[in-house]
Amino acid sequence: MNVLGRRAAFTLVELLVVIAIIGILVGLLLPAVQAAREAARRMSCSNNLKQIGIAMHNYESAFRTMPPALFGSDPRLPDDMTTNPSQPRGEDDDGFGWLVALLPFIEQENLYNRINPNGHYGVLGNPDIRSVYYPGIGRPTVDAPHPGGETIVSTYRCPSSALPDRVPAEWAVPGSENVGAGPVPCYNPMKVGYAVCDYKTAGGSCYGDYGMMHKIREVPRVKFKDVTDGLSNTILSAESSYATTNVRWWNGDRETVAPSVFRDMPTWIGTFGSGADETVRTNGRTWSPINARVSPNNMYKAFNDDCAFSFHTGGAQFAFGDGSVHFISENVEVQTYCHLHDRRDGQVLGDWGQ
Image (tube, rainbow, N blue to C red):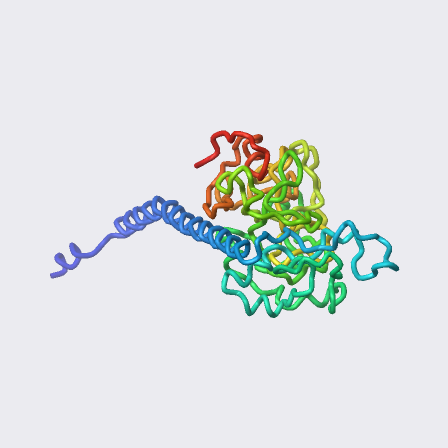
């Protein structure tokens, strides 16, 4: 019996071999599991962009125009605070973002009503050029975010994004730990607490601000009929999931300093007090390449603050005017990328699809 008992047992060496084999199998399977999860996240992100495209079509159908990218003050108004103290001209980069206008069209009407943007210039068909900047509420303050702006909207978040859910008071910008930086403060305290967004509109091309949407200065606003290059050839919205810093990397690694602040983290409600329209829009220009010439792990070295930017390897996803969604490589030919951002340049597009 003792002999039979010994034959039925495993030796320590055999157990270690089995454990090693299991470890190898897990190591082999883990990349496949991670790839499957990323594929699912990428599909969810694509669905978000498609919902944004559909919402924009419904908005344009209802109001016969698209919203501006940013409902700031009108730049044609005087800077004289005595003449118009509630809407200084210099604040045309501040105000509600275009995604606020889409809330009723993505089943977020209650949130839209809580924000209550009616009376603010340009929101949902209010074209009054004389409307004041922040009627009834005044200029937002550091300790009083606009009601509703802290709400996380799942349609406006990419599952692959590593950005925080809300703008934090301090944040460790990825990659900056390599130059000795820890968490750094937000450049604009007014942004703290607002819900983060991973999608922006396409504002301009190499030839000027002739994207699908621009700031309030573009009056009258764009209609689909104004997109003479064709809706299927013009970018409507892009992934842009990154925060810039005060470190500039125009020539590779010219600067090797740690950031002291982080700046334009995107928020769907818009930009209050930061004067940065890059919070809500991207550009397709030679100095605004996809993924800002960095990887997400080196975000603090971002080349520019108005780029498309994605946590999906090798490029970013874009919604087009016809509602379709496409992944565009970060190596796309720059002129082709520029043409995709322009609604009326009439140029022939190169090979950009994937």
